[in-house]
Length: 549
Image 1 (spheres, rainbow, N blue to C red):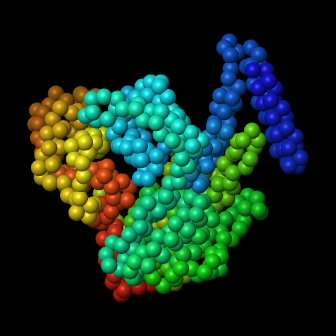
Image 2 (cartoon, rainbow, N blue to C red):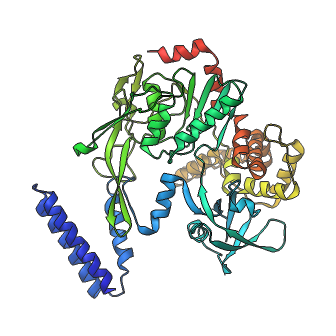
Image 3 (cartoon, rainbow, N blue to C red):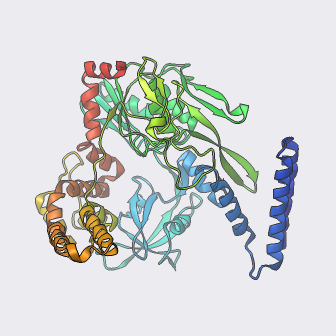
């Protein structure tokens, strides 16, 4: 204990010395004073606090609180967190290759990755993890289980799992491997001339994955147009965003600039390679989940009038993070700059300059500044990237949200998999009316109650009326309204049948054909993909959008 405290004390003193050398400004005294105060507080607490203090946990709380006051992207990466950090940047980790999710008392397999150890060992979505290395994992979190499943490639992990309907526990010994998550989980032709690519994250070499996928499709047939799907892509490595843009943008073209408090942060990033194709019609799909590197790619395509952007306004993350080594195999990831697209706009949607809190709102549209694309089209800063063609997000009904939250669609797919050894290919599979009726029967004993928006509004009215002493006067009308709008589950199951049926099909296809199959299945009903096809196949409309001022 004393050794840890002494290490922390000397670490702070060293930091103080470094700061005294680095800062010859008026705030030097304040910095040195506060570091000394911190050490003194810690020393007194360690000496006299009523209970023992865990130095690692205690100081980590202080660091997290300090960084948390700045912006949501500045964070401390401890030695224990390094595996997760490396996975975010490389897409690699040592483990069994499966997504997991929390069930009731146990964690369950949500999706085994095709071709990796979990899949090879016949682990299936819905399998409940009962024990790991002979020890019960009841009540453990997904983080707990993830740490137990991950490890050095080549080592074994023993698991006891319970399969739906099996009635017994199954023992599995799985050899861990280096798991590399594909940044491009799906690439294929959506018709005889348009290629579609889903890019999930900007990890190392994702641009090479994309180029290889494009080359392969070109070998198998003529590719006359491209749809690049960045929806839900949270971003990643800046250099990979530039490389992805470089596929469609000429060499030596400005992609993005960064500007920070330090001059070393001010840089221009240009494409450095010969492009694959600068003329092919291009549609980029974005949504509220498209952030950071995704917004750089979508933004530069828009600013250079290289392609059409379709979907919903993106997230609005225009901040650049840099990692610094701080000793003891730890790093600090800190925001060092803002990035600016070729038009000069920064799409950062929230102003963190005065410090961060959860109540900060997005910059209102009235305060956004107009900029011009290469051809003179108007685009705006702040608030993310606005698509050239807006599409509406499909809203789930209350019953649909309830079925998802209660994992009943997931559970039915698990039951379906155990009853049916195989299904047709994704392009031919369709849930029948008899299957849907079976799903409704499956729900018979399940709890999936919910409150509709109308019911909530009436409940609020009732409470307000009682508070204002008007309830007795309008009780009859409220009771009548209550009876009329009271939801009927069976009617809602019929009303939202198409929506629920699609989600069931996606989940069931995932059981047999994994992520590639699920994506292929969703493409058939995807309104953004249909809109992209309509526009890029209509040369006149495509060109009109890119020249519209």
